[in-house]
Amino acid sequence: MNAYRDQYAQLFNNGDGVTVLAISTDKQRTQAAWAKDAGYPMTFASDEDLVASRAYGVVWNLLITKLDRRVVFVIGKDGRIRHMIRPFRELVQGSYDELGKAVAEARAAP
Image 1 (cartoon, rainbow, N blue to C red):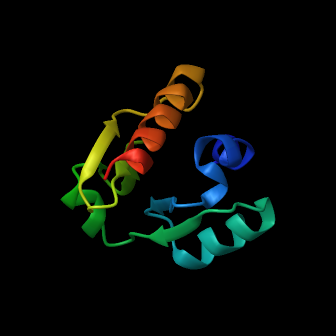
Image 2: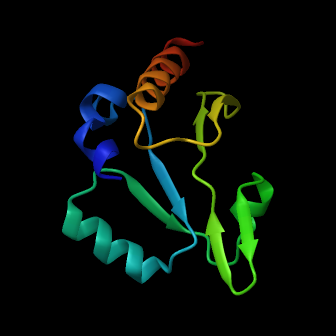
């Protein structure tokens, strides 16, 4: 999330015409405190019940622990998924290059 924050202006046009929604299985209270402390400019949503995770096929159940795979969806103005990066490798610069290109293309699409 730090890389998203640090590259927010470049990747997401500083939020102009772009909504960044980070969904996690963490509790809403935990996410809110963490996001505030770190100064994240994006919106966070909790998916404790795994509804969104299951709908988008990103949940990975391990006995007691529930984790999400890191997947990034770029959704166009029409509400359709324009691009998906699965898995998103947050330590690889190429992932951010691909994301930036996909966001720019989605913003430019009618």
